[in-house]
Length: 336
Image (tube, rainbow, N blue to C red; front, top):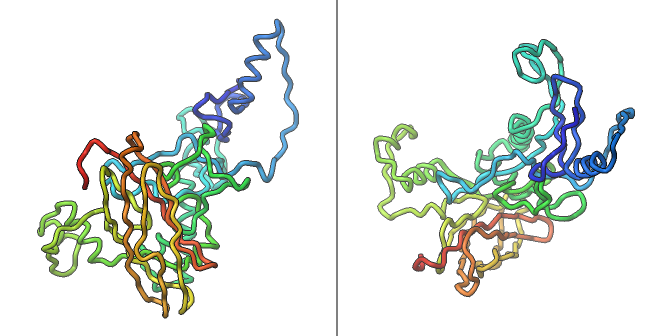
């Protein structure tokens, strides 16, 4: 059997096990094959010895089966968070079932080529463990921030990472982009969160005192001042509806050299203008925190609705602390 990708699956090949002899080819090769079959009365084929190709370009590419955003439950929180290798990963495999996971497959193997979140997640878990060993005092939020803000937006051809369809990927495809473990060891700045920040988050979601107490070891009362979900100190900024102007607040902590100066670099999402205040953050010590505001204004002349994407980067010449900017333009509504 010859299995050819459709247009949506593109030129990405997943090494799936089969229950009968099979060859899997990409979309481009599939078009060529069908063209050949239609052009001749007696199509012929032959199989050659397989070879392993290293340094394939472009890579990485987002898997066609990868789940995408936006976050349908809490749109102010970008999902997914990060992307990691998860296609055709060779890993130890259970002998409780066959490689195809169907009842009549009686084969048993020690290793299998597996794809999915079950493969990409262990990569991130390993990075988390290494970062926790290197920085034992970092919180889970600090580790998450380090991973997200140091990820790569480019593939190995120095172009933006694409989807299997060969279209450019967005933060709804890969979140904070593709994990870079070595860079995550020294992120420069982190977006940290405390237990109270998470409890305030539950308050903003409408949880009552009784419900919140289930998450807290001590009595906790929601702040009297209303809390905006967009101000949750997350390493990405997502505005689920914008028609006018909104101000988003973030706080970063210096975890690198004691004295450093960071400058804001902004790539505004199409149809918006983005201003950072202040544009420069000066740190005198490790652990020092600074607050800044991101003012996002919708351009009513843009004429389009829907999600648009940009990027905020804090740079000190050595570190690049990158955060996705995600805005859903809705110019038919009044200013927020």
